Amino acid sequence: EAQVTQNPRYLITVTGKKLTVTCSQNMNHEYMSWYRQDPGLGLRQIYYSMNVEVTDKGDVPEGYKVSRKEKRNFPLILESPSPNQTSLYFCASSLFWTGPRGELFFGEGSRLTVL
Amino acid sequence: DQQVKQNSPSLSVQEGRISILNCDYTNSMFDYFLWYKKYPAEGPTFLISISSIKDKNEDGRFTVFLNKSAKHLSLHIVPSQPGDSAVYFCAPYSGAGSYQLTFGKGTKLSVIP
Image (cartoon, rainbow over all chains, first blue to last red; front, side):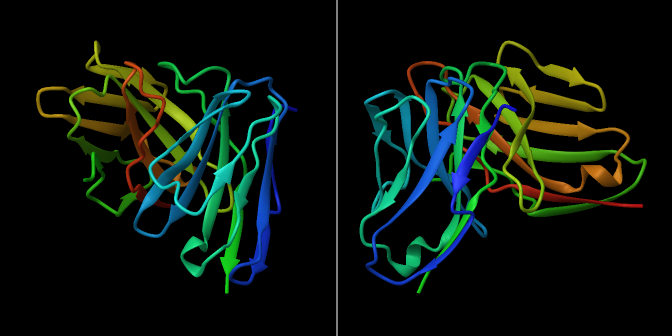
C-alpha cells in the first residue's frame, strides 16, 4: 500500500530534550516536505527536499533541522524543543515537485506536546 | 503577510444544498490552485485543482472556479453530503521556480443531515 508513515504519532516531551520525528514513504517520491498545523494558522511549511541531499527552508524553519540521506526518509529533528513547537506535524511527499494535479501525499500526522 | 486568505473559518450547510468555499490570494505569480480536504485525525488529501489558464474545473460534485482578475477562487460542492464535513484548504502555488505550497488557514465545512 502506497503511504507516508510518520512516527511517533503522539509524543509528550519536555523543553530541551532532543527528539526526532521520522517520515518514510514507499512511493519512490523525490519531493518531501514537513508542515505544522496550528489552530487559526492553517498549514505552514517547515522544510522541504527536492531530492536526496537537497533540502531548503520553508516558511517556519526556526528550531528545526532536517536531513535527506535516503530517498524514502525525511526525518524532522528538534534539537532543543520549546513549548511553542507544540503542534500537529505532517510529512508529505510527491513524485516530483507537485505539478498541476497537485498530488501531494500526506502522512497521518504527529501530535507533539512540549512541556 | 498572508498571501492566501480563507475568510470563513466555518460553514454549515444542509445536506443536498450547495456548499461554496472561498479563497482569495494576493500573489499574482500563483498559476496553479489546489484544494485539499482534511478529516480529523488524518492527513490532508488532494481534492481538485485548476490551472490559471482555465476559469473552471469540474470533478463530479466538486467544481472550482477561478477569477484571476479578482484573485479569487471558489470551491462548489453540489449536492453536499454529510461525508463532505471536513476542513478544506486552498493551496495556490507558482510553477515558476517556487517549490513551496502555501496553504490557507482552512474552512471547516459541516453538512447537516
